[in-house]
Image (tube, rainbow, N blue to C red; front, side):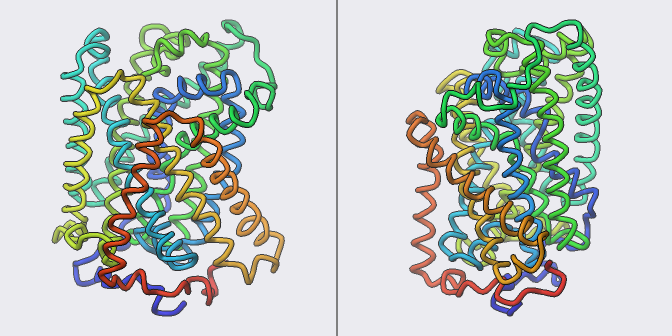
Length: 482
């Protein structure tokens, strides 16, 4: 790999870069699972999925999960070419085109920022729900205040350093997954004798989709279900054996959350009528918990949702701040975003900038619509942006490894066909979803992406070296890349 593909001014050894060799494979897997936030996603997104495809939720998750795993393979192999905190931003820019790389990075920045709204809201709501159900559904000011406090606590942990962040994730995600596994078993047992619908294998087929448009709508929501596992790649500069650990952590994370999502989506179909799901759209999981284990069950799952929501706020902050750090380092965004806190070696100014913008959006959003409306619009808008940078990454690995795709069946499948199918799927969902989404979703989804062309043009005109580079990554493959 030529020197032109390396990130400029990394300076980790001088204390001006991120802290190297801190995290291992186990941390990578934990971060990937926490990034996808299984308990939060099931609680907050099930209503959107049911609204889009009814009983076909398991099918939507399956047919999105297969291409999503192809994207995870793409990230795994791209990590072997270059460890860069910008991940898709760096890889796409050095293989396809710098402008497309910027679009990939900006897509993540905007989706993560919007998610701060979709995440902080339930964080406040479920915390209050542990003490007062009525306040959790009606006291907007209190929900906003508690959600903001949790968000600021996560900001503090991220600034404190990646080692502190990882240890916090061990605890939060460990308890969350343990509770989910327990209730997955209880849900299976419960469904044997107490179900409102009879299990059908058609839930995994296409019969419940309302044509291709319905399938695309389900795929867009399912993409949000999986989103976040790639945080392990944004941490690759801070990992031991980063070329292997970051990518493998993402793959294992996708497989773990896929299993959890399918079990709970089937359980929801069996135990809860559509009207009940719609009436409890902000926290379907707690209601399912009461169905499976009345009293204690609902409370335990509320705790799982709270931990999941808080944990994914942290991983999302990591993703956006590492991406901003990488973009600032290569002078495609303001230089202050790349400032590192001495000793902690974290991009503290980028973290504070994201916190200020996200809090302003979060507080403002609580006065423009209901909880259900805010969550649904945010999920769909983020889904559009996810499709952009995941799709670009899928194409990037095929181009980067084009010389070795036919060297073996393994290469053809894992580096070529599967990531390419994943990319095509993402772009197809994007194209199918735009005409059917409402104005609010298109404004936040596509409008947020369009805003990115302002800094792109500014820094291109100012002569950022990033935009003058030739696509070279992958022209010479390291021996351990395949």
